[in-house]
Length: 448
Image 1 (tube, helix red, strand yellow):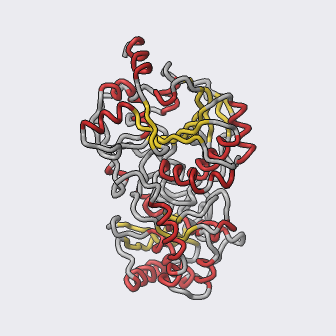
Image 2 (cartoon, one colour):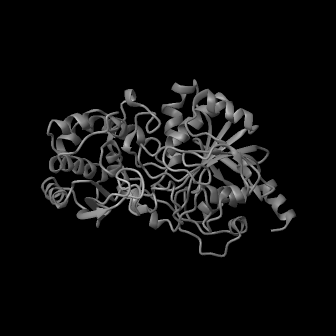
Image 3 (cartoon, rainbow, N blue to C red):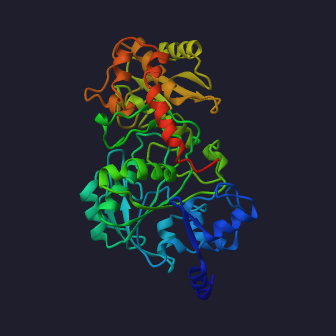
């Protein structure tokens, strides 16, 4: 694209905002041509091809960034921009959006803000890359992991930006930290008087009904700041809208100056492979969409002394400990049949984690094999596995810090399992809170 053509696009692109959601001029035109209201599939236009410089077939889903770029970044025109992102912030041809935006004169990109695992993704769980100059772009990368409130607002202020953009792939579980990075950044944007823009990406495990317990605020932490369901069934833009109306004013005194750029070509029933987008691990132990599928249930084992499969090629699909044998897979299979846990099988498995729990030691356990992902219920399956692990292994123990309560969002899961409750009894205890969350959630859903 010539320089004059770029300037023309920047000058003529229009943006409208309805209900807190930015709809670019390009997207409106495409939506009209295809009978779309902003959530249906659209065709690829020349502006998008030029923005990405790619001749690859266009994915069926167009992310918020794809649409922002195709509209000549009109939403960011005249703004000094900082972006919260990580390795998942990529174009369909897997170029990082920071590299793309930095090279484009239509964007004044001034700073990058790194979450857990870092902007380039080099740190393990509970770590970050620190603050540094990015060697690829020369941009200052600010370490925001573990920062919130006024401390995070001060980072935004010192960076010199007036608009903070968020673009990170989520996996659909409340305890995945990136959605709370989103929340913390929204609160900080209010405190620092910054505009906030969220570029949407798919929920890889669909956007169907929420499930699991809702967080008790008394257990709020970095893996759950506010009361949402364990498996929330929302995209990051939908969560941003919910946060901004329900939670941000309570924390910051008023809502954020929020704009969201929705996807096209994504439906609530879509798993990640339906999008046609490339999968980039959002964190080192989320290597595939299969991991995300089981994560909302098997991450609960972080709250026990069993391995959740970290240090293997199948984290969260492999679970085990020293002293467990075939009895666990047999018990899990029997319980699944008794209580109706469809879509999954449990295989006796042995593995030696290269780091984390039981590092270098061969241990026994199970591998989950999901054969019907439409029917699979990860949260109830996780509860069933906790119950049967406790039954068959005398060494079973909760982490002494009661981390399981922060993961589930309630002490009742732990106390009821300890008291011998079954899967259905444990699940019944969270139904009232879940029903209330589902009613609230409904008002912020933006896709069919």
